[in-house]
Image (cartoon, rainbow, N blue to C red; front, side):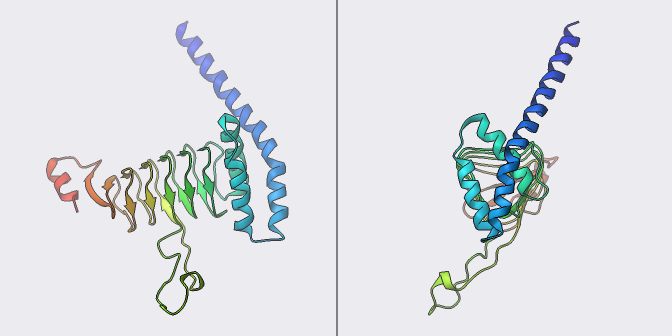
Length: 217
């Protein structure tokens, strides 16, 4: 009998949550249409960032659900089952956020894709690659030399700690410790990276101490 009640409660909670998501999708739809209209008369990413800035200021669950709905509509392959924290800004529309992703408050998210069930702590910065600013010509201001924006890929089931700076791709299952700066691709599944610049100290999935030792770089 108790099991039946628990199943009934869980089922009803899921139904209620899905209903709320549909409500917020309906609320976000006019915002999305306004964004599309405004984007016709200006830089798409600039307009998108302005909308993101405005949405980032809405506190509480209302803000969390509304941001999830808007990004689901506006960004390619983005789930509505995400959590984007207060004061977190997305700067490029070409950003994909998979189901179950949590992004903490006060983050700055550049052009990237984020895999399922990844956690991103407060104050993290994901840059659009590590070549955004050229500076080879010493006679020309850096801001006039251009650069290349790249889509960074963060794997599934990663944990990106508070105040990290990510400038390169991160493989599935990796942990980047709080305060670390990752400027080169972390391409081994399950690596634990720390420091500035970050280095691998062990691997989550290594089966023996010897394997762990071999993972240290």
